[in-house]
Image (cartoon, rainbow, N blue to C red):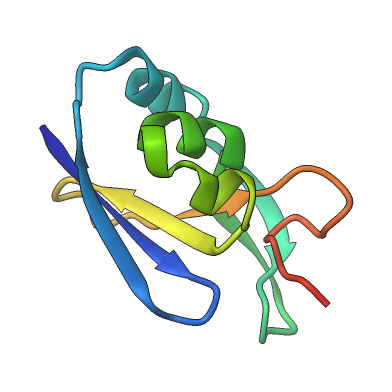
Length: 100
């Protein structure tokens, strides 16, 4: 088991244990990519590590709706790794999931 730690767009945090050997977790780690983007509240474009929302939702299992439907999570990290990965939402909303 490994712990996932996520930060919501409003700053609240959420954590849950997941199976580190699951195919969904391995796929999410394998699909990590970097992207230049302007983070919300910022003006400067930065290169950040990213994961796709669909991969995160698959890892989260039954509570994946927090990512797939409500688009509430902004970042994720796992285990003792301090790297933060931005969750990229695909669709009509912008990439970081911001609404409005």
